[in-house]
Length: 120
Image 1 (cartoon, rainbow, N blue to C red):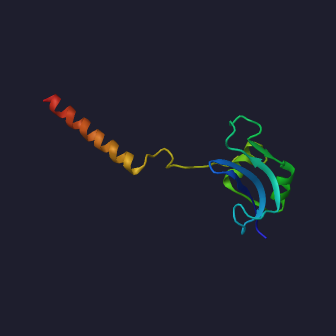
Image 2 (cartoon, one colour):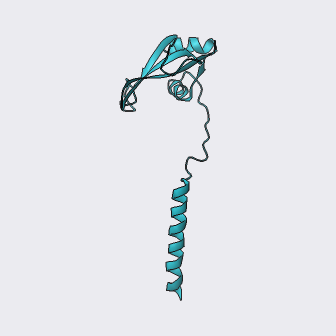
C-alpha cells in the first residue's frame, strides 16, 4: 500500500481548513485516511502557532514506513526541522505572463516613437 502524508480539506466554502493525514495514495483527497497527524488553518496569521499543528513523532513513524509527503506538507516539515530543506528552482516565477509582455512591448514602442520626433 503506497502511503502519502497529505492535506485533506475541510471547512465550508471560502473558509478552508485542512487535516494533515496519512492516507493510501489511491484514496480521494478528502476520502478515507489511516491516521490524522495534525491540522493546518490557512486563515490564521503566518506567525500564529495554531496555524500548523502536527504530531511530529507520528509523522516520523510514517516517514520511516516509507510514506511520501506532498510538497505543501514537506514545507511544513522543513519549517519544523523534521526534514532537511530542499532547494527549489522556479525560473519562470519572475517572468510576466504573455499579455503583460505584449503590453510592455507596446509601451516601449510608443515611448520610442515619442522620443524619435523630439530629437529631430
